[in-house]
Amino acid sequence: MPEGRSDAYTVIEINMIEGRSVKAKKRLIHLLFERIEAELGIAPVDVEITINEAPASNCGFRGMTGDEARLDYKIDV
Picture 1 (cartoon, rainbow, N blue to C red):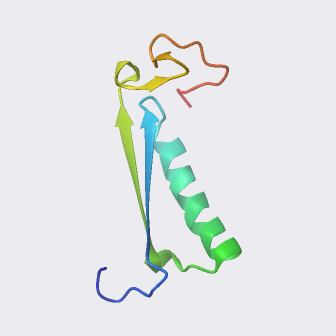
Picture 2 (picture 1 turned 120 degrees about the vertical axis):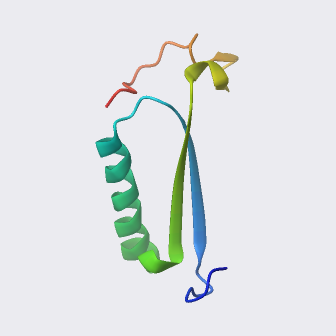
């Protein structure tokens, strides 16, 4: 782990279909830092978060690719 981190050092990787705004992704990251600290007692200095985005055609779930799926939620937020 990087210097200056504790035994609580945690790496979070989030994989998602592309389409969320920069604002939405930043909000998610900030909320994760806040809640991880509040609920788990892990300081933000011990948390690293990476968001990986892929085109819908590169994702598969429910037996189909992401561009074939009809989602009941918005991605472009």
